[in-house]
Length: 277
Figure 1 (cartoon, rainbow, N blue to C red):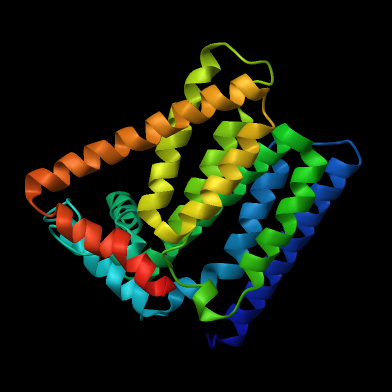
Figure 2: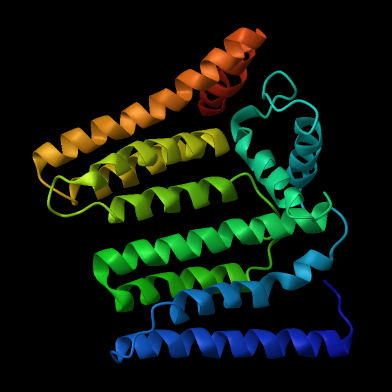
């Protein structure tokens, strides 16, 4: 994006300060002077510093942005997918996210879509950091997330800048991992209800990007396997499946009542196999 010299200087000043802050936070963690919120906040500021010029672009960076904005406008009149719109394999969650951002007072448009992209990335970074901090400590979490934040901050290729159909599923996968990290090592207690929410998060992944389901399933199963013994893994996996299929059942009932279940099957389930062929 061409920018005036003074705006370009402000961009590099803000980005340089954000890089130094993020690196300092990670070094403080390594030195044992860990502050709970300094590292994740610095990672979020790094992403904001690198991506804010994209919000000044008035037009679409990718056809997906136009598609999901149009779907969000239609959802404002009819909320049920496959009756109001056919989201394809992208699912309806991406457009629901745009409606949620619109409810915050921002007008629907391409700059707002990039704000939604930023929110998804912030959720991803924050929840991933909190999950990794619980599992491996603050040093491991900071070192793992700093390259990811730097990638999102310095990426210039448009397919990594626009509001894509992968962003909501990335945030949902991070939510899954955080909930799994909150499970106690010792099996039992009230936290054993958390796997149901893990299943709900897995459903959100599915409805955000059907291609993200294998990744979410592999990460979820691996994380569940290391949070307890065999009995804990079996029970927690079963509860997660209950949460997932309960959400599926609610969606299927709504689609059957609306008479568009066959459209859902052909568009969302059969179409990915055609891509594979």
